[in-house]
Length: 592
Image (cartoon, rainbow, N blue to C red; front, side):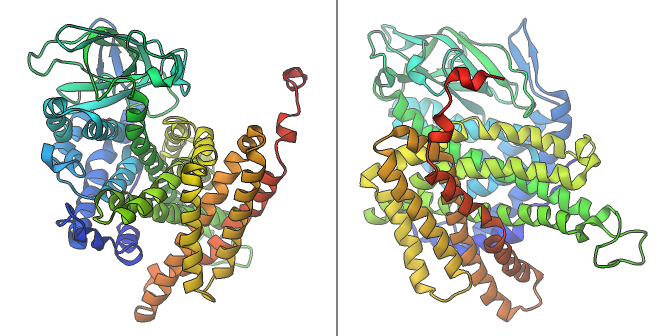
């Protein structure tokens, strides 16, 4: 069974000492978001995650969701209804939602923290409110006032939940191939007909209504993605309570997140309403998807944190052999396994990557709030540039490392990790999907290298370079400045190589995409660790016996001396080009 304690000290260190998140209260609309408020909300969120949501995780994985083919309804695992009720009664769905429709209007940064804690305790459960938040975001930005008034209050309160209906049996990422149709009616509504697959929360028993955001094509629409529109299709028509013709056709049978209802949804002439303008559905969906990608990154971090805590606890309890340098605990029959260098390597890799990823994600969350609320347009634009650039990095790197760290936990536990008794094998299974949905991590890498590097003539990446360069100039001679400078130089070198070679041959850019994303992640996280080390050293002067600060200082050393060694191989991978990847014909690839 999972054991979890919210890492409140580290979270508060990031918010207060690293990011100075209390400054958010100076922004219009965030006046109530004082540092004390942020801390109080996080503490309460941690209690909810640990005491209410965590107990549903293991049993929910075993029981899974149940589909009734006769009624076409889905029953969630035991305890989910009660946990979701507590989640709603606590006002958590409304936390960062717009005030004008019943939300609390607190910073998005707080939602990043809450998402992490919920996904540490039950990733499958967290997907229900997570998709609802995405639906709220899309409707808030793109729906007309009538649709907002009809649907947003109940979505924000959590009385209703939302979905995102993109994928169809014949197409995933390539949405120009969708076949779902929307036929206009005389009353301004549309009849939506088609099948969508892999729809999270498409049908369940947690809420009174389910609001689907569906991508479909109008008659005569262009065949490309420019012909896709977005429609809002509720399970029940709000005014009449009439059951709409949007039915679950079955559940997917999955390796993980079994408490999350992943549905085939059949729209059989279901009544829907156009969101925004016709043929703008793809751009609207990206509003929802970009937020979802950041949320998925937090899923990876949440899994990684839960796995790390289990591995650490086990390493203290499990006795095995003696330390190579001699007994560390002679009073015991053997030493705890954390004394062994190989176990220590795995534990430190988990700890240091987790804390670096958390810092990076929270920094992006802080910039997200600044991009929305800062009164200075230039400040908003600068913050948005960082969010756009690093969204694919947060999604891909945090989920890659979440899965890797869950596997490290299995390895630390040995045979115990391979059993269901400790819960880490479930974390491995749950974590795997995060690298796939909301755009596979390969797609994230292509988005970074193919779109984000070229936006505004390269302005996004230039801004990131300028931030880190400016920081290094101000902190010349500080610990690890040369190491961070080396990472930055490698990333700049890789960027120049991609610009020179990828423009001439897109396959060169495609071959470089994944190692380039990882190199950017190591550089951005190095930027975070450099700052965390500096803050911890300053704090340690006043509190030299505080183990937390000493751990930060030593963790920074591990990051720059051990964790980033992959960076040199990444730049070599990028510069080696596409030839070894693309040389085989399909027949040669198949030869055995």
